[in-house]
Length: 311
Image (cartoon, rainbow, N blue to C red):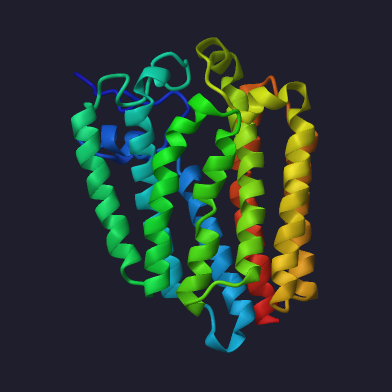
């Protein structure tokens, strides 16, 4: 009896038995892999800034309650726009991806999807993101459109600067502004501090992620903070995480957060501390696990603010 290998075409850095490889129809798998649906950590990390920004706005005006509808819209938008961003990144980076062991199995360099097909899929995902964005107020829509500039330039930064992680942070942290403005129709200092802290968080965790590719990146000339920091990577990640905590706490205290929030932040600090203490920069598998742990940082930070609101 002939059997079908469900993992045929699987991407090297996707977890085994992920839902795309196991359950997605064959025609969808290459596109799902292109959008990184088989590696959901990316859309979680794009979503959490929206979530904790909504929580921050709730602390500012507790009587309005927490906007669960906005949370769901932000999640859908995060999945769509993260997929669109990854698709655009893979179109731009095909030549680089073909030279890196971890990425040459991705759909475009491996030939599963053509660049034209990828471009059409990019447009589809962007339209979903647009529909979500139009559910919000004018300022939020304007901010959402403005973020496209950051999304567009990010893939090129690894070619011209040692700080592509900074540009990823500028783009990936945008939700820290979006969530707030969706509730208040205005910007103020607390969400700006939240945004700056989230940029530092992104630089920290993406430096850990980039440790997986240091050797390949050096051979082909791709720049990253992981290469820039070298043996001092753990120290710099610790500094970025310390700055993250300081700015996040300052933002929350400005809107009236109290002891329940501060107690919840101990979980965030604990996860950060574990990442730094146990990080082995020369072991890719170790770095990947610590990178993925930032999902729990986003969840813990959001819950810390919601706990303060409830109490």
